Image 1 (cartoon, rainbow, N blue to C red):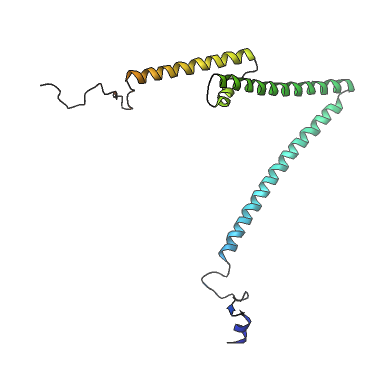
Image 2: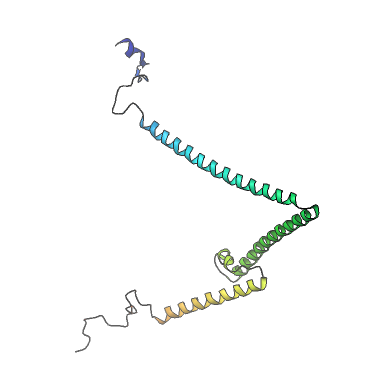
Length: 184
């Protein structure tokens, strides 16, 4: 065993020499390193794109705020107070509308649940309205339509008739197959 081989052997286990760059079927680079490099590049690219997007959004909002500040500073004190009050009233009205819609959606969900509908929250989103009377009418209308359709489907099943297939042929079994002689 040479001195070099002894240096690479530790406790009887042969360890590879990290400085050895012999070609062992590769180009000297580990395939995992290339993959990790690509992953790092993709992550870096994604981070850069996200940072650029966030910076752009921030700059836009900052510019809008500065423009609003400039506009308000150009107004007299009385006009500025009036403008700020108007903006506050508008924000409160929007918040109140959202709260009202959430409350009405909960009420609609409760009403639909009382009527026995599964997944009432999905139906509640359809019938919800700012006006409680209009919402009650929506619930009544959808209840009538669903019950009518269900009744028609039950009657159809009980009568024994079925729909026609996509080719336009009756699949109820009433018609005779083509090419079969039934009487002589």
